[in-house]
Image (tube, rainbow, N blue to C red):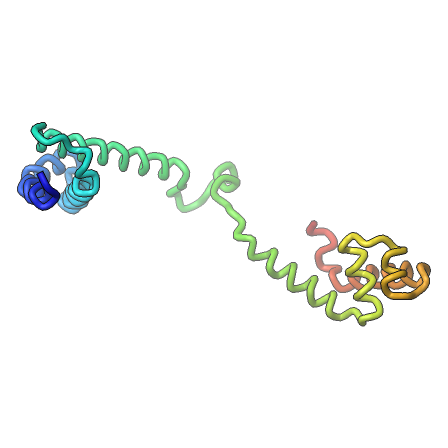
Length: 170
């Protein structure tokens, strides 16, 4: 049997599938959706059907399994979703999520604070932050190690003052 013949036989079963689907769903629209899902799976997995076996039984099995899987998915989803108007503090921990939007604002503030540093302070501070040692920064910039330490210290103080609003947040 080729794919076109198979598809024709499957389509012919759609009316009996609709009646069977209404037994599961008790709703016409949901039954139509279930039939559509069943037909789609049957056509998709055409190669799994063994010619000479009961096509109607095969389609009913696909429909039953599709309904069960959808039901399980809905039950699992509903167990995580609170449908009450007021969320209890116990459910708040589960339902509340962070979208990391505040991190964007923090990073913008840090970048703004860094950009406010003059180049004399920014370069040693950023090199130190990236993991360079004092003597490596001193050699790279060709300045005394004491000057490197002072510039990093001053840059830290400026950054702390600029980012003072985050003092108790993190």
